[in-house]
Image 1: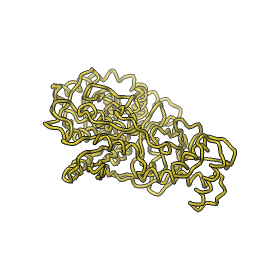
Image 2 (image 1 turned 120 degrees about the vertical axis):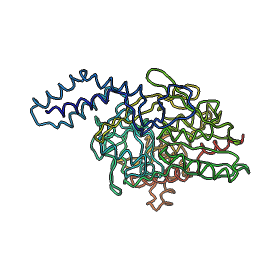
Image 3 (image 1 turned 45 degrees about the horizontal axis):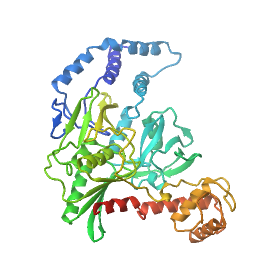
Image 4 (image 1 turned 90 degrees about the vertical axis):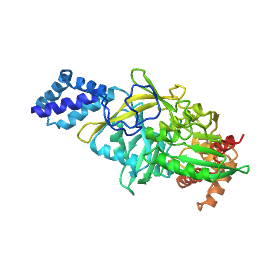
Length: 493
């Protein structure tokens, strides 16, 4: 190996060990390198300050510490039985160091993955439409994206993906697993899912599609004669803050008397985006977020807003609300004393920064904690709602996957699942304990007759699949959304 290659290997590995500052992506930090902890607003970091530059130069001059890594690289290249790829060895070394951190959010991305990641943040992409992370070594759904194949198929937060098209993803890093899940529009992918609380594995087939990243949806509703606005944010992407401001301005011109901000199922996104949104609501006397570095130094960030809105606000969250969604919810909860409605959120309280490696690849590394206005860290615990509300039971049912037909006088957890679905669809199964009673037979017959299925009163594969489709359609229709109803009610109590 020539001298140039040696230096390249050393520089790549050394870059991982440094806290080099660059452009941000993913949950992107947009903070300045100023020493003043009380900062009026954040700004995107583009250049290092003099003190940071001196630190980087010092670390670059400490190359002898990398000698062991270089020695291992040369030993493998020169002595291993079979031919090896130098680039793969270097990338493997980087990935190995990241793996030792045991941090699901610190990952290495090759140039192809970086391009896909950028597409997902900035525009649209093709795939199933689900935000995923690593939890306890498992590829885990954070949340399906609104109107995506993943949402239509009923994927849920905390679902663990075990196999893709019958191939195990165990041992793969997150982005290798994601590359197997994503694919061209119109192609089919089968996922084997382990769902918490469900004994049997689920097999879910999805047709990939183009996933547009329209992230803001707004509407108005009447609540006891008063006009309320609802703004749903599905992720925090490049243009989300601008779109939010546009819709908020429209709603205010229409004379809304209260506002619900819905971030249920929102897996997060860019920190500067949620910052800009919070500046519309959190006044200058309290920080909207705090950032803590590895030394425990905290920087607090403030808006220049002098007066709060003259209408009440409530925030909707659930298990799929993560990262930037949690910043928004806890900031409005603590700094604005607004109601947070729903179920405890996902629990991601760290901030990652992407560090370019010079060849198109990058490392996304956890560098900071984010803290609430009062200094609380919600990592792995989530944001607790001030008003806890669950959805109707059928929202939490699972696909009924059967090999043998379920019939009268049997008992099975799958029957209980079907009974909850039937009741949610306004059929009366008589019970929900998993016993296939005569009342359940009659409910199944009626459902089958109403849906063009041979009315046997038995739950076969066709009936089970149709029940699942009916429930997903009902959920997506927005009917019986008790969480949203409570959030609207909370505005005018």
